[in-house]
Length: 299
Image (cartoon, rainbow, N blue to C red):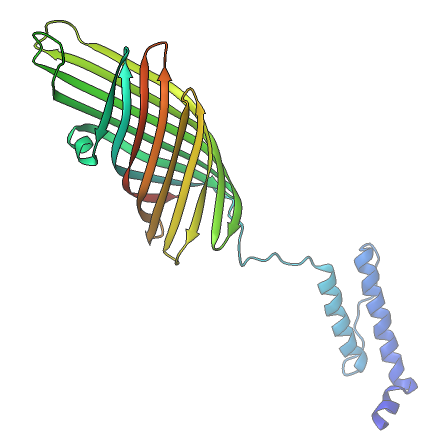
């Protein structure tokens, strides 16, 4: 009670009142910075000095803007990734030209044994929630031991075929969680198929034919981490345009070797049904098999 009486005495109320007036003056200065005030602190050693320091600190905190949270900085830079891969695929379906159709079935070994050259890969640019993947595949096949049918005087046929597929897309991240990332994608798939026939011995000229078409496709991609280094990717798209149908699906297992290098492997399935009745051209084919590759990341 003695302590209470000491603080409630007239002598103790004076520095408290002075400090409250200073606190009110600081609040007014925060609302109207043009106001001028006397900020000289009371004499040292008094209770007013202590309250003045606390009021001055509170006023400073109230007038300074809150600092931004830098624990998770926003990444608004473009990132580029290049993923070359090998697709050990087999194929089956039907092909035709000039009114002649044939069934085709070839294993991955058959295609590799007749492959001349090829290049496959994906380039992807990404920024914040946007991704722009561009997938391409070029493959040239040949066979110089083809057997002719009903071609008198021809002993063999040299056959060369080239296929080029380009699929540019644009995607947007619709789900962004630590355990699940999902993208919606849309784009086009451009196809080029070329065939060339030469007859041995050369009794008459061979012939060359090719077809080009574009299909519109839409789909998505899902990424699920399994550990800090391993993850699963499932992607697919479907659509049509000049083809009656055009779709693909793939499942990949990814493993990060280091910051800018990730290895992946999985299964890819691609199906297309294209028919050009004006030129009697048919390409109804399913291609599927194991794919292996690596992703090189660049900023």
